[in-house]
Length: 456
Image 1: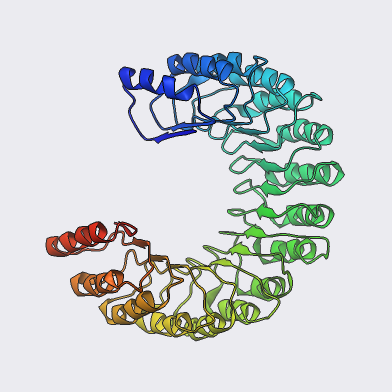
Image 2: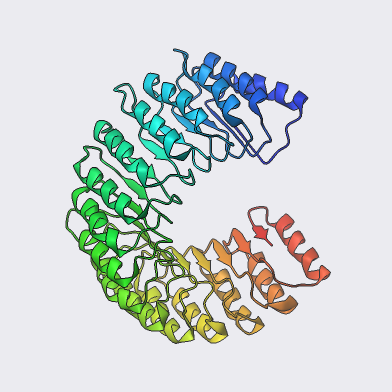
């Protein structure tokens, strides 16, 4: 049984009622429920008395160090079987790390620890690393985003990695590590015996100087499937170095996030070669890079390659215009694997979207999720979009936010939604002005089709 409550102010009477339910739950999720340390005393008892509990998620609650101390008392009992613990943004400090170290050292059932968005600091995480080095620790996933870490943490992390062959996922995003530390970390990862599957280093102060070492990790760790280095200024030269590792035969990358990396169209030659030849690659994010139409056209050529298996392409805010839409449309008519296309925040206009729709209507196109927010789409394009919605049964999600569609445009979209042939389940319409009459029509449509969710 699962208990999943989010964003709810829980009264004392409601809490007492929930405690009875928790005694038999396998999963408890209470994110953003205004819980405090006093609630943790009760939860500690639940952990102690409910051996079937394997996942506890308490993100975005003011638990504090005192709350974690209560939780750890339950976690240290022999009857505890907890595997996944989420404590993101719970107002923890380095003081919590000593008690969590005890849990890591003594509780072999714990395989996931998510403590991002807490001011643990380098000193606190060094203590956690000591717990990881205990032979009893079987941790597989460690999430340390926004923990105020500095370059000084890497030596302790590398020591923990050397002793922890079970570790599969490491997230260090949004910490000021810098190139020297990241290079040191990568050298440690190459030497470590762990079969790392996920490495997230977003916004870590990385430049092209670190990319050769990251590339070495990609070559040496065939287990690595998910790499995110978004929000780092690696530039075209850094991307070229990364591609040396990505193109290596032993690299089995599936998910690659390169958003806001100062890439230009010059990178698209390497990216195209990667997309067209790396059959394991299924998702790539290039959001907020200045690829321009010329770069997008190169990517589209790669999408048409029979060996391309890409399923998700994110090119939002990449300086695209209608000039590249014929190439995108042509790729959509050829590529049967692409399921998700995020192309919003580009000035495509009605002319560009009309061209896209030609590709979307092709029998080979299997797009399920299409994002066209803030693309200068107007009423003039809504009839064509409505035809796509009513015809392409694979399409289940459509984002048209921040476009001046007006009442008549929204009514055309609604008309398509009402049709039995339309399978769109989620329609996103943020920041679009419409009349109260259209608002009533939208709500009536949601009531008449319970499977449809209109987000505005």
